[in-house]
Length: 382
Image (cartoon, rainbow, N blue to C red):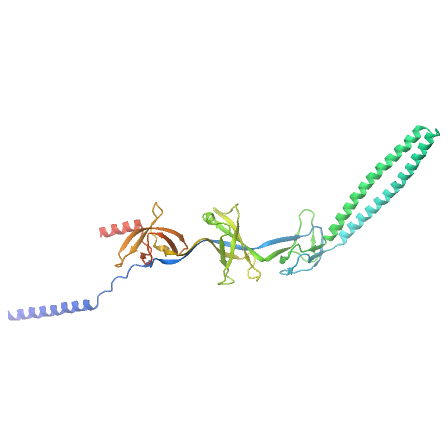
């Protein structure tokens, strides 16, 4: 019996020692407290609201230079990418055909002028004959019919003179037209610009009978137009005069800026999507921008400087009155719902108009009402 009690006493002592050791270990190895929920601070800041859209760069002024006469290209005086001034010679066409047309027109004018001179001589002779017949009739030396015949002949010649004068005027107009066509064999620049397209070669024959063929294209690259395709959901926020900015992949870090010049009222369709073209210009005298570049454009639709802001991810559900539910964290990180009125937003921050004060903490990414109800039901079932 004593041996049995001794064994139990030993076991109780060992158990007590183990319990004491476990308590001591837990006191020194307590699990860390749970981390506070992610939160943001309500503070003063700038909010710049913008609409983002894809854009393409184009020369503001672009002119297709064509041939107004048919002929073979004799000389190209420019090359692709060359800068030209207004009036510079661009292309020379073979002028021989146009010169031949001018020579034929000059010959036709000369022939008509000679015929006119001949009829003028006939008219002068007819006038003299009429005067002679009138004198003879006064002296009763001839019949009245002879005088009338002379008068009729003079009238016919004078009418023919008027017709031939009109013919000469027509031939002279045709001659001037042929001379203008001859001048078109020398194609000159209609504006200052850069040769951006040169689809022809020396020796190629151009035909201008039905459609004016394009010889080359000039573009003024000093000013670039940005054609931005804005979705119909955002177009009502865009106004003429708003600031638009973009950067390119070629020049990282540099931002180009312009003012919205026009909003084209007729949309473009891409499948079921509707886009409106918004145009603005930027300076390109350094030639850093090229035509047909694609860029991402930010059009500033509103801004607020040094206003109360909070992270936009802190917004909860929106009520029928337009206010959002925000979970405010007190000193013990306890969540207190509050209704907040907001204004502009820039994708990261949102302007706080009412409901919060500077320095307050708000819960980031608060759960929705549906998520909260599902979480409560899960806790109740467990």
